[in-house]
Length: 148
Image (cartoon, rainbow, N blue to C red):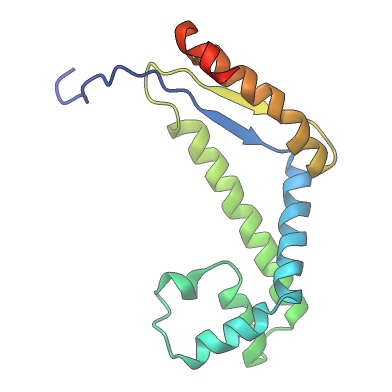
């Protein structure tokens, strides 16, 4: 239609990895625990010492506000961790919802791959053949041999 982008001569496809919610929540919690163990509190302390504008992206990163509150003594570090993990999980859910509704351009192919694996590592390893199969299915037959 009018105002539509010109055709590029390429076919696009999308692969969305949608791990089970419990696995995603566990991965978020483990990641933040690692961040704390690897110096996140000291990093936030250093950011605060710079007196940066709270609206800057670095000051709005997941966990910065919560750790800052713990450093001020208004909440415990455990509460900061709980709030950060919860907020990060909510953010991931919003991202997944947005992707489901906006990722695929009108008329393009897409595939939502869902794996009901319990362990995150099993999910990552088991999904690779499905991703490769999807990608190969949308590549032109003449180009398919290049990717074998």
